Image (cartoon, rainbow, N blue to C red; front, side, top):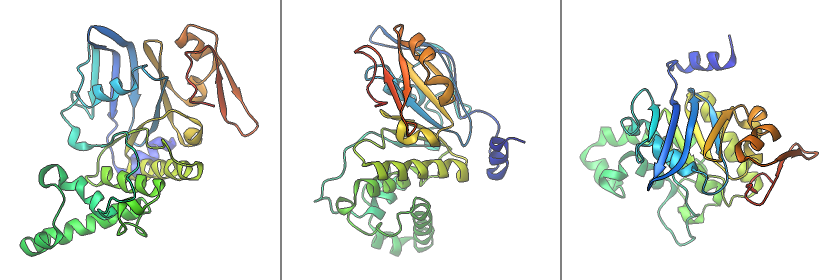
Length: 285
């Protein structure tokens, strides 16, 4: 029995892929963004989406969330057409850090993941008086997910007084609060220092393994997350290639994607350096 099978058995998840794209194509404003894309993401897999700016990474996320129709081929998300199961998807959009004068507490940021779309900023005292049993259950649920991401020590602090890495942990907790089966993270490591990038990457991998949640993470630099990944999806040249990092981030594969000679180098620490012409991304340096 493989490790993936053991993980599925431990968390009791189905064998049906979380994400399945077959010969998929996307078109925006009459322009072809990418085509011939085949991607399969299983439960509990940590997958990075890589590629240069303008290659179609954001379009891929929009297709999966049902915000952009697929032009050709087939797309299934959690066994349904895109958009049908969005309540089972935790989504963390690209964002800048909260400024230091933001006073809302980290715990309230997490709570917004439960009912912020319906009620706005929660009023704990009113909830405690009107529905005490429901209030206690919600408090326990919030406490569990905050503990899961390791943020218990600072969740009561104003979010603006938390470090970048602490803010990201709280926002990941917000995305996890409804117990999603798919977690979509748009550049969550952007602007974080190296130790914070490593900490967030390790956290995401642990969530994958322990909770059986599939993760799609858009990144500019693969190096901080390379050792944690199960797969990468590399979007470039109007298409995409998916597979194990060692199989995708190679000179032959990237040369084929870009249609120009590409070299993939490794430094002494194992970091990847992609070298090519000017339109080749600089995210692996």
